[in-house]
Length: 245
Image (cartoon, rainbow, N blue to C red; front, side, top):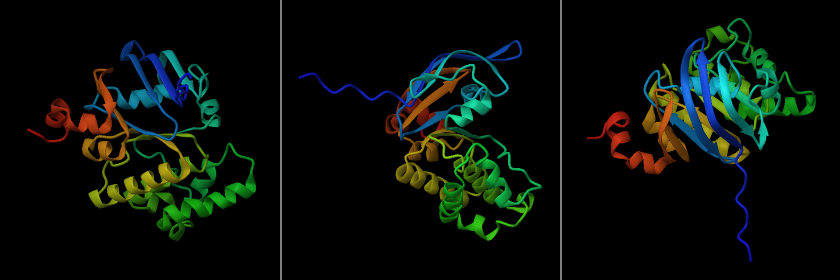
């Protein structure tokens, strides 16, 4: 009897290169993500982590190489078409519309959807994960705290019902208590709803605790990859990113 075939990855990146104008930022990245998994990209500032997320959704960079979502090539597609295929991007800096209310921001997250009843149900689902957003649903986003704005940015992305969520530095500028709360909710969303998450995060310790797999980037190249627990034990990673000796 033949062994069962391995499941195809949700995301497969092959020889991905990216440029800002004439400057090359990524040099032939290759990695995969299984459906329902959490993968984190680690590395110093300027290593190419944010550029990788932008390259995956055709945002602001010129690319070469292959990006497959569920076996379908999406490299070269327009950003809005990639969003319709189920990829949601939460950029660094959160990207909320400060002049709109919390609820209006969430409605914008569902702009690709026509299932009004399901959208209404998703408001309740989001508010169950983030009760503070329900309390502030009529409040302008610009008056929310930094942690609440990050919760709103994540929630707006989830309103599109993505299969893959790209998260860029969700802990930036937030108190450790708020970061732990947001990461715990992301774990629940991953486990309960099967949303795959590709996480860029400077807090390597928390990222490795949340993730199943991890890749270490240096100057636009992947230099190390494997299960998150393996990278947590790696001497190079411990010394450079986890404060180990």
